[in-house]
Length: 81
Image (tube, rainbow, N blue to C red):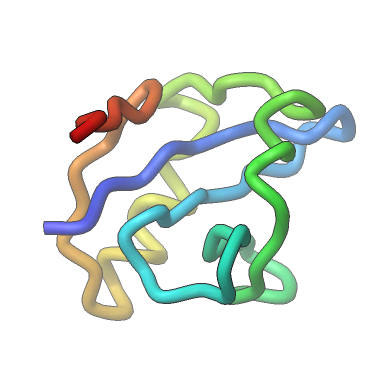
């Protein structure tokens, strides 16, 4: 099961951050309705807001429709070992 965090751009578009997907070092995999998969800096957290379930429901269903099994998170917790 993949973790996902749904965030909202200032213009209202929703983006899914998929931290468990492979991405280049220092980057995070992302998915949007338009443009679909891409990667970007984790700093995106600072320029977006947490999306509500009503806001991200369509994107969640789109991701499930292409085969993702998702666990929605509000934030990531890291194990510092």
